[in-house]
Length: 216
View (spheres, rainbow, N blue to C red):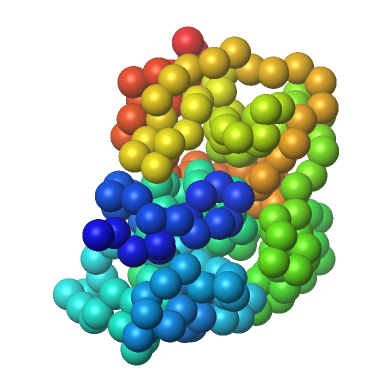
């Protein structure tokens, strides 16, 4: 029976057999190791990170007495939920993310990661609820995640289209919408994507569109 430790693009946790391509946590433990039930809390701290599935052979009990393990379909999903690359197991990506953030936001000083976590925390949630942003779709970069107008589907922008998200990968290609849309990805991470940071996509995305930056 899968644990409710999979992460949707809106940051909510749910149970699903699909493991995903990335792992992460939210700064510690916020689940109950005894019941392993869906927690009411959504974080242990503001440090929401996404990590590789395996690092230096480390092993521990998932949803045991340690931190609350989370799993993501891909980095596009993790970014939409409000996570950033881990500085320990993904140091190169974390530094690239920070450099793009500095350029994208026009910062005069390079922030420490706790300050980046503070920025993201203000953009990704309103209490326990997901904070969304209404933005013109023409200003959005590849890798931005949208909430469909029906409110029940998640769509990732890639090239001239959108890809319908599922826990196990992308399952359908759709036309790119027009006008103002509801965006899940925090504005700070949108700035990172605009600067050319390439998020890790689930392999299923390649079946529907060529990689970003190539012609269709």
